[in-house]
Image 1 (cartoon, helix red, strand yellow):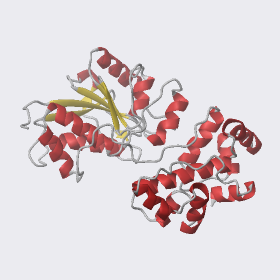
Image 2 (tube, rainbow, N blue to C red):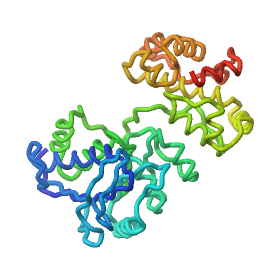
Image 3 (cartoon, rainbow, N blue to C red):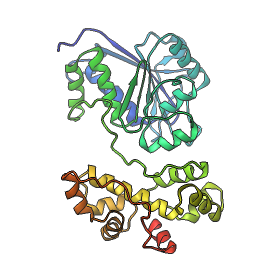
Image 4 (tube, helix red, strand yellow):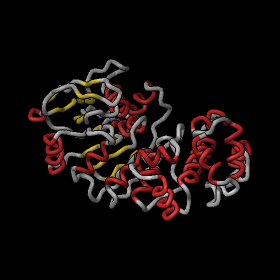
Length: 350
């Protein structure tokens, strides 16, 4: 396909403490598609960082980006892209930027949310009635904040009419490549990804690489506890530390888990970690030792014993039977019943 000589014009709004990798992946695909080789001239694509005050914008890693266009001097854009920041801190967009987005949406400009940018679009009332993509890592955070909306967390990006959202990381490059292919041509999209050492363009329905969850809670306290457990799989807190972090007593936390899930916090933590290990075994070539460390087990032997008790096979056997098509998916509901609660707590931390 011959690229059409048409500019793809994109404006970026970066939240305070925005995710640098999502922004960089997206804009680099535009940059490489815009010109021959990697000369970076904005011939076929054009991009700008917008701001109401023109102050440098700090990313989550501390690197700052200098905006180049004031909101009151913004031009006409094919897309406005919002790059989200750290959701547990007072980060976000200014009121003027939110109003700018809302006005653009009323004018029919398509909006893109990268990483936690989907949170900001939802807060601005710009995702009502739309499907949206959220990283599996932030899925429960999204439910906690917007309980009436069910996000898509098993795809790398979602395009629903004039709203485009992605899970962040390298999925931002694939969403940008989708836009380049749509507006400029497939050759330009493939070229951009190739220079970035990305093998091939992925469609939006490609599954997110990452762990899902075998547990769904109704109790808000239990949901918050599970979020913290999932986000600290490699270095789990003790139940006492978890309760203190949530501002409740240990007994209240244990009663809430038992009433909602029928499990203690320690055994719920085991299930999350075992499920994460199962996912890594099924989707990566990583060694059992690496996976054990990544999921909070003290060593490979510990993971092997726990995995065999939960699934009935060793991790190595799971990989073999998985390749043959046998379905081994979740730990049984009584996982850990051969262990008493004191040992379960020790294993949760170990």
